[in-house]
Length: 126
Image (cartoon, rainbow, N blue to C red):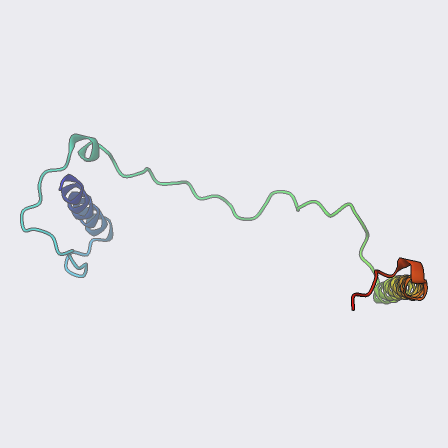
């Protein structure tokens, strides 16, 4: 298979490159490859290792911009805001419960009235 030979050739070339860069020859383990490594294809053999990348100073020249949305809060502001949110949530939940109770009561009233009205009943089979 052609791709296996190309893979083995690439591994051999990479190992040779690593050994030339590190200067270590005996510490790297060779992969289980055939004894004779075929010559590299022209496209791979003509490639050179990448040039050294210049180091970039990690410290920025200007400080990062501060968020525009809101100034930092004091602890008291946070507490009062949380209390206000909790109070609004409770009111919202109480309103939902009231509406559910009203809906249930009106539905049950309609049901009871429909049961009492004899004209709405289907005829009973004997």
